[in-house]
Amino acid sequence: MLGQRLILVVDDEQTQRQTVAEVLRDLGHEVREADSGRAALDIVRDQAVDLVVTDMRMPGMSGLELLQECRRLRPDVAVVLVTAFGSIETAVEAMKTGAADFLTKPVDLDQLELVVNRVLEMRRLVRENRLLRQKLEETREGLRLIGASPAMAEVMDRAARAAETDATVLITGESGTGKELLARSVHELSPRAMEKFVAVNCAALPENLLESELFGHVKGAFTGADRDRPGRVAKAEGGTLFLDEIGDISPVVQVKLLRFLQEREYSPVGADTALKADVRVVAATHRDLQKMVDKGDFREDLFYRLRVVNLHLPPLRERREDIPELAEHFLRRYAERYQRPVRRFSAEAMACLMAQEYRGNIRELENLIEQAVVMARDVVIRAGDLPCNRDEAPGAKPPAGIEDVRGDLPGMLEALERRIVMDTLAAFDGNKSSAARHLGLTESGLRYKLNKWKEEAGGEA
Ligand SMILES: Nc1ncnc2c1ncn2[C@@H]1O[C@H](COP(=O)(O)OP(=O)(O)OP(=O)(O)O)[C@@H](O)[C@H]1O
Ligand SMILES: [Mg+2]
Image 1 (cartoon, rainbow, N blue to C red):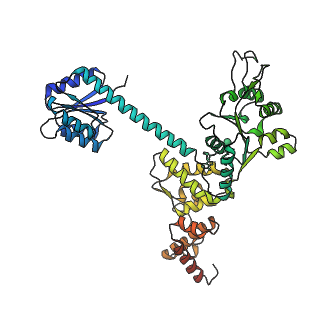
Image 2 (cartoon, protein in one colour):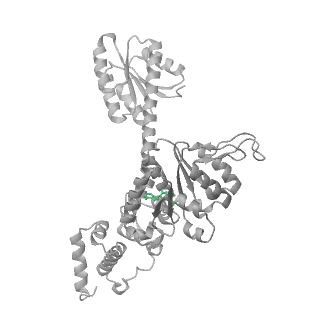
């Protein structure tokens, strides 16, 4: 029932120890034995022991001392103490220091089984709970929308206000700008947060399948429909229905969707009755729906129904000031996921990230960082770990701007320093305090360098 566990039985008295060990083996556990606290600790140190059952009174290290050492060494190992009948008070004291339970001598074997099962079960629950909490944290972290740029702050503010209502929301923006993430946060911020968020990718299905996917079908509606099947609308009851790639739906489905948005009523494919639905709709598209309306490819009435609230996510290249925080966020995520010791970016790496074009927006940035985390050799991600500066790997030609100081290492280093500083500054659109922060300099330190270079260049730099 509990699966096999590794249990360590500790007692200097051989017969007593063997009896207990045997009972536990009969219960299906793997059992090790130790005749002293010292020997026990050696085993706890090296092996994945789940539970220690130890006698209290032993020569050398007592059971209590063993308990304390175990707590220090491996806090997740459970310890059960076995005491002589008279010393229950000590046992109670031991419980306060972290023993999982205690047994009195002579050990009743049924009691032993009971206590061991209970302690192992408890331990399993605690672990499971910790895992679940970790997962929850990850989900929460994954749902976090990052972006302090004015453009993002405004979108998020509007999203939060729209979330309080049942208004239909249309999210627009280039591919990879975070449309789906924003749709999820609208749901999370809404009074429907405890209900389901159901996503449908409208571009992934052909017309007839999309209709039955959304609205369901009745038995016999088409060949292969051998029973009634509810659609996604029904699955989202009480919650939020996310229609992704809404610009890709056919004229026929557009009509059905319009009716649904107008009346919150729909008919499953093949049914002649209408069903009611309590569903909040959020739609998204990377297409320019207005243009599609103008060209007659998208119904104007549907367009207005969808766009009660329009949230537009600007492309990443128009809000570069969000790059550092996003980059740090993805660095933490992937360092955690791949268990890599990577912690930060070098100034050149950050300058390189700032300078990218990002046709693929945040998704592209995320992919860059995921790859860099995997490739990084130490705690710092360097420009060489990113695709931008491949040419600058050791041995390649010297970076531009330092050829004129060839043969003069200090001069080369200064020229290089100057270039890094200037690039960083450019990447932050000349914002000195942001550039200084990313270079690990104080703002006045940065100003000092800039002034010095300016003077050296005769006031022209
Ligand atoms: N503001 C943000 N903060 C943190 N992560 C973000 C943000 N925006 C997007 N992401 C992440 O970037 C990736 C792409 O986002 P998402 O899938 O929401 O984009 P999309 O606009 O739906 O793209 P597509 O049009 O290609 O479907 C996801 O991993 C998402 O978690
Ligand atoms: Mg998407």
